[in-house]
Length: 425
Image (tube, rainbow, N blue to C red; front, top):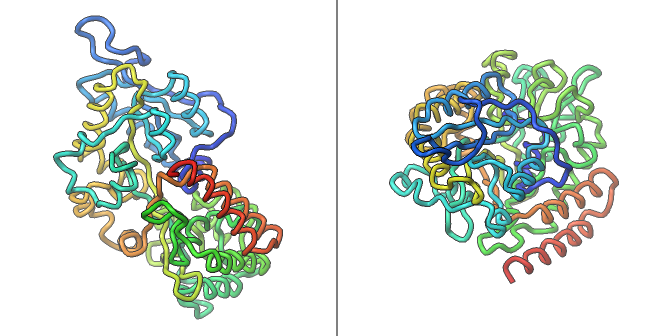
């Protein structure tokens, strides 16, 4: 449920640096822009920004929610393409949104671009998983409200694996072997993104989690064993050299078209695509498993992504923007349920709402929810874009060019530690 660049930002956990671009479609319940409270007695005017979701009906739903809010006039900006750059520019210049969705990073806090939101969930804090709140906090303060939880893992065609007598892999070595055996002249074994043969595609950061490591530990130090990650990333090169990866698909990994069109037997994908895959392939032919343990002693891993609501510190009326954010993303369970379940599948962040989400209680959706509960790893707001670039550049040289994995990752760790020293001393 996302545009390409936004999904990459989700995985990377940081802001992109591409040039800003022109605005796309925009809607409003009034036609008014963000002008603050206006004349005496007028409602505050707010701008709320979304990236462009892929599922039909999402933009209309966002407008419907905004129109129903009684205490402000809310304009919706629906931004296709490079949401990261547009948002970064808008927040810095003061021409950006009052309320918006994004992924929390420490830089947003240290640059004072967003405001704390602890008071919005004070009465219902126990209805959120502690790990979800932690992923939306910096230094113990909550800066973003989780809107949707988007677990990402591997979906597969049960019939194609059954024809070869293959069980869902439980190790990365088994996944590599399965992908090779499932590859035919017409169907590739595995799709993990069109750049998976050079960059590792969508398998970072999951490949780190599958060693049992984390990008950063609880003390904000390197959270993985370099030798183990080197071994795991080297296996991704084997996956590429086996020619069992689907490359050049019409759309990238976040879209289910490749598996739906029979181009691959297994695909890295988000739970948001389960309704579309089930409709196209049939519920009985769709299976799911976590990224298998990558090394001896490793663990199965699910990348537990999502989007969160924030309030700009430069909002014309910060309190009005906070009130709207609380109304929609904390109190308004009906619209949260609509957003999470009617345009793709997402796990509602409110525990009570997730518990009664009937659409997520059967079949592959239920399996996805359980895999996320058992193996999900949330992003860390202290993982910066520079750290991400250090790791992805190293992985690209290892997978795409055959560079020495140990030395490349040691170099990346050196850069990450320098970044950590600048931040934490």
